[in-house]
Length: 243
Image 1 (tube, helix red, strand yellow):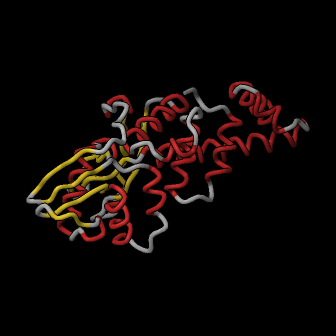
Image 2 (cartoon, rainbow, N blue to C red):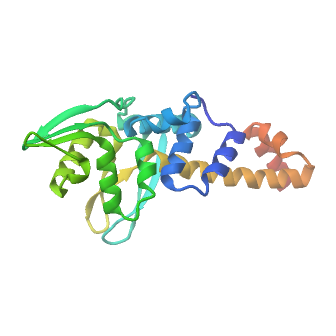
Image 3 (tube, rainbow, N blue to C red):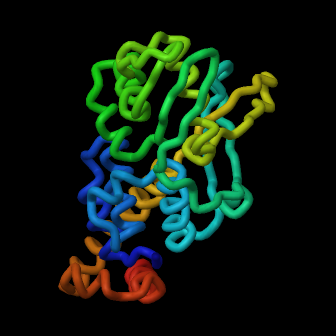
């Protein structure tokens, strides 16, 4: 995995701009793992996906994460500075099945994947998506020794599935503990690698488009030639134009 070039950034931005977040995450994962075919990308566990995407972020934009999120109580914006290396991320877990038992419920589960989230994105509401994800994660289920279909799981039993999945693939959902300095409210916020990476790609792509526009208009250079320049050289030409 290497840093994205200027050309790569624009291509990824163009392909991902109009996609839903789940589909965009798979497109970003393809950039992070160019050696993997589409079906292998979709089958990566969410923990592995987070590790790969944060790896691409590190290579392209550095280790610092500058985030901003509103307080759910008072609406004040909380600014957060994090280091990717401080998150303690490993490579994630393989999407291999495991068995768990709780209160007479026996489940054979596999971790959720990016392909599962892309399928859930088409659901009408959160309740339907929750059922779909549980159905995809549960490979077999029995209650009191009697086999049941995953669709027959009750709400409390789906809660068992959710807790088991969180333990099975802890990197699938990275939660930040936040405190509002204004009102003192405490809450948890999801840190999503695809969101962080897309935010930087979107800003970088729009900046590149402005640079290409100014340099092409001023020097009649082709877009491909401008993108092939180093960032330092483009910046130097822009400083000359500004002077």
